[in-house]
Each structure stands twice: as C-alpha cells, then as structure tokens.
Image (cartoon, rainbow, N blue to C red; front, side, top):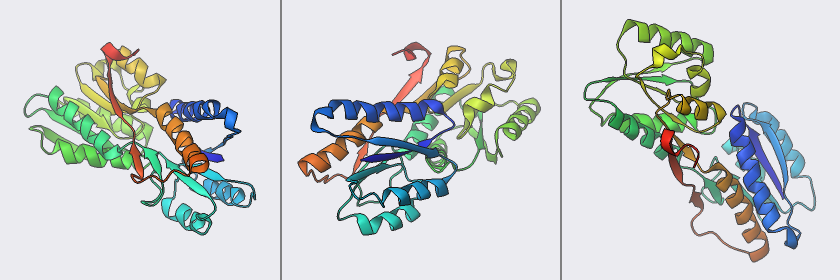
Length: 273
C-alpha cells in the first residue's frame, strides 16, 4: 500500500497524518501489512498526479491512500484500476463511491461562526478575510462560516480578499485603524497573519480560527486567539490505514462511505489536554 499525503504549510498537520498512518502500520505489522508514505506539496497538484501515475505502474501494489488535490483528475486516472486496486481517500473526499476518512470542513466553519456569535455582543462587528482556496479546507471553512454567521445579530464586514499574508496584514491594520472592529475570522494563513500584527492592535478582539499547530497553540497561550476548532488529525491517518487493512485483509465493504472525523474546540483551559 502507498499513501500519497500532502505536505502542508502547517507542518503539524502533515506530521500528525503520518503519525496516525504509522500507528496503523505498527498495529497490523504481524500481518505483513506495509504502507509507504509519500508526500507532495499541497500547492502542486500536478506533482501529485505524476506520483500517482508512477504508482499505478507498480504491479504488486494493492492499495492507495490519497489526499486528492485535483479530485476530478485523480478519479479519472484511478477509475480504470478500481477493480484490482483498493482506494481510500483521506482529508479530501475523492468520490461518493470511494471509502473516505476526513472532517466535515463546512461544519467546522459553522462551529467557528457559532463560537464567534457567542463571543460577540449584539451589533458588534466581525471582519472576515478570505485568503482563497488551499484545495483542502479553506474554501469550505469559509462557506460554513458565512452560512452560520448570517444568523448572528452582528455586523459582518466582508469577506474581503486578503491576497496572501503580507497584504492581509496591511489590510487588517488599515481597517482596525479606521473603525472599531470587535471580531476577526481568517480562513487561511490565520496564524501567519496574526503573529505579524501588533499585539496591542489585537487586544480585546474576539478571534476564532480553524486548525492547530505550534503557532496557534502559542497564540492561545498569549490569549490572542480565543478558540480554535480542530480535527483529530492523527486519528484520521490511523483510520485511513485501518480501513485499508480491513478492505484488503477482511474484504470489508463500507456501506457508509464517509467516516467523518470528530471536531474539537480548543481554548486556553484545555490546551494541553
């Protein structure tokens, strides 16, 4: 079996996915169950396609676990091999017919908006910065956030295009200087942007993010980020490895194709749990 996972800017995500897969390898080692883990850049779907095409030429390959960056293209390439090759998608759902492990990113965006609604008072302002689609989650986080925040009795500014880290920093500085903004939501690069903003400017602001990593943990410790909503990343890697084992060794057929991973709300008091 080979696992094609993505190398994210958030190193914590990639290392946790690998850790989960390695736990599955260790658990089923006695069955001679092996998974080779290969990573490709999250911003380079073509490189992933290249790696996938190389894998499909391996004669004794039994299965592929994949985080598909270009779902349509990946499925088109894999489809002729589906009778002899077992596929599990991880993080990004490949196709309704393929067993999948991963979070509901739209729901996670809704959870963040619900938390923001509870943190803000009536008619307070929340600024939304959109830093585009990372091909995995950011577009879906934003969709969920917008779907839920419209039900809140708060004033929404945006979503405004961030156009990357540096430009987002300048945009937030400008808007925070011009008017009283009480809350901030950024769907992508949030931790990179927040560390570049003056601490005094963020004091008293309500900030909720998606995801976890060293920088986000540090920002929660410093009480700059109020809360973050994260998925149980290593559990996803483990579940993908286990499900592949069950398919190959037990001929298991998954009636429910999508195993939705649980979401956790992390804040200062439970940060080390």
